Length: 555
Image (cartoon, rainbow, N blue to C red; front, top):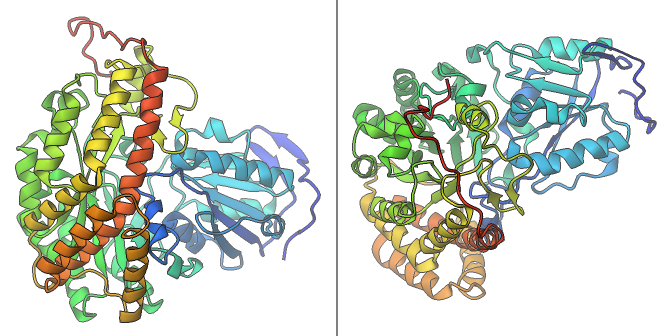
């Protein structure tokens, strides 16, 4: 099946964007690779010291692409989060497919270079390729920009016939009602904590710093409820009984379609005795949609991630996140908690209107809102966004890679706050939020504010698996960690107050184990930010022009 020679690929002819390779024919061995992420909030890497799984979530995009490929193509997946990528794996493939986000760029580049050294043909897609194809064209044989759902058949035909292009740019937004059920069977399911599915793409809002709307559009496109149910049925048949994360960047972007889906999910869950606990991302205006949230809770949605970003109205206006200004965001968070969803959230510092008070204002808001998983980031200006355009026009972009060594990212533009003030303030805020006592105190407050309904439940492990997990937690967190006193205090409170409340007990246990990730990650990131503050001492912040001379927004 295909040519397995170790000889380098020979480019026979190149004209414009077409590169002539030997035809692959109808039977192709495809190696899909998911690069390792930099350590991050979302990666939950610290939890892997306690839980039996090896990664947080699988690469849904690759399972979807596998379902779109010709049936004669043989597909194998390597997830570098836990799989070792060996030379024989690469040499056994006719074509290596890689998808990646910007946070995976380091390992992506290494993978592409390694494949080239071994003489294997590569094609890369995903958000990174769609945003910055010029960075990947020198490394990959083929680059795909855009959503491939309705174009992959013709691309595959190009490969089979030997007429594949170097660059495929897909401008049209596909009709996701035609997207097939992902091939979940290519995943090693037991290795993942959470499974992912997708209901919609796109978001109706216009946040200046968000590349979702520039990549996927501002008109949310949704699957039919029957499609989503078919995907859940596939997971159910494969034996999955844990968390399912609906990866939409805004699940309620089309709130009418979300309500219709939630109603069907509630019926399906009841018919199967609630095999899955759902979580997703949504805008804060969910608080204004009581019927939608009620139905989501009845379908066993348990967790919700909200992009709160900042308690500063000035910063929200500055970056056009106007949906967060309709009501008091603190009241909205409390309302969502009271109606049955456990809230986690994202926060940003480094807006032009931020001053030195923003760090304490963020801390007070997060504590008052009772949000244990508060994902704090320094503002970035991703390529393709209006913010990137504005920074470019103002001459404020910083060229090159601005990552902190594996932990996070600095701003990729000159901030108004002096860098040393921004980094030192961020380090202090992280230390305040994720000191073990502060983290567990917020978790207790969140459990007190959260009001689950009787049908809500979190995934239940078999008794032996539960005992093994507890013993591992006792040893790793209760004996060996540097926060063991806070750990035992929280565990004692958990048993005393919530052992007869399955929903709260389950979330409390999840939060308890997550402390090993969040507290450790935040401590390392704070240390690196302090180093950056020292390195940037004396560098002034950007002095913006008076508003009379510039509106501050891109045209």
